[in-house]
Length: 410
Ligand SMILES: [Zn+2]
Image 1 (cartoon, rainbow, N blue to C red):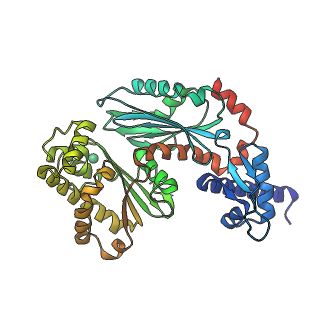
Image 2 (tube, rainbow, N blue to C red; image 1 turned 90 degrees about the vertical axis):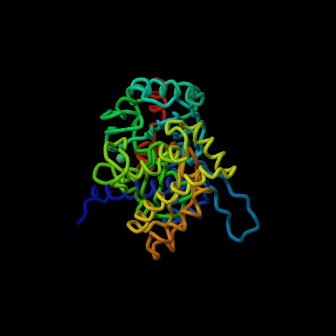
Image 3 (spheres, helix red, strand yellow; image 1 turned 120 degrees about the horizontal axis):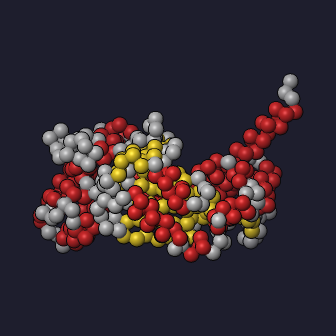
């Protein structure tokens, strides 16, 4: 016999799970009719009505009566997110730039700023101060009209997700930095700060809102100076034991190769990263963004030396991608950052090399495409990371708006 308390607890758990399911649909798909919510969650019409009214009372969603469009039956009200009622602060620390965004419930970007920064190794203090300055300059936060519920950070480094510990970022020159804790105290927002690798977050964003939407098995490959990756298996990010998985750029592919920033030799990054490409094209490997732009212009103009370098780039890309395709059988390989920009020049050689190197069966269902969100993919992924605790258990946030608004302006 189940006691009333136990039944009560159980129905409480079910209610929380159902609220989470509804909020996820609205967050990921935008405005949806109640009938679509029924179809997507498997809940009954009356359950949807009751649960949506909880969100409406909490100020997170609003309903709009559908305009009768001549369709038979009663029109189903459309459920909309209120982006300002639950927004997150997303931060990206990249090699060439810093970016912040405020992203509202439903995925609307309410504010976005990116500033270029010189390459070279700045200290953690310097970068944290720059990030805080950038956040303080965001008007939508100063106005107090937005309720922040979390902070997500994308960084070019190897990160332990549980506490935002950055174990190394060779291209920033950092090692063993408690980045989550440092940003949390510097921002002073009294909100959870979650940190993850930028390529992992790029993968998450492409999966939810970009080129990989609808696919459950995806490899996101992001190239800049460093090469990173994010792997989604069966809809879930592949994290490994402590969140370090997916360091695609550090797959050891060339035993006779160059020394990598991580200390090893012949990592994939040393063959396909920005420095390798610039070097092969006869440009300064440290020329940075300007040199890459010039290289792309030369490629567009048909410069033979540049095209030859891109051919070698395509070959090394194919060597790594063939291994990933055989290992993971992904639906899509998404090329982000530098690789997205190179895609028009490397696509044909890449295809040809993959026919030689990857198994025919997993190749037959594979799609290779440039990132749909462009340079902002990791930043938008950081936003999705910050939304996660809220989406998993929205009920625990009901009634906290006033309290959060106080924290944000404190
Ligand atoms: Zn390496």
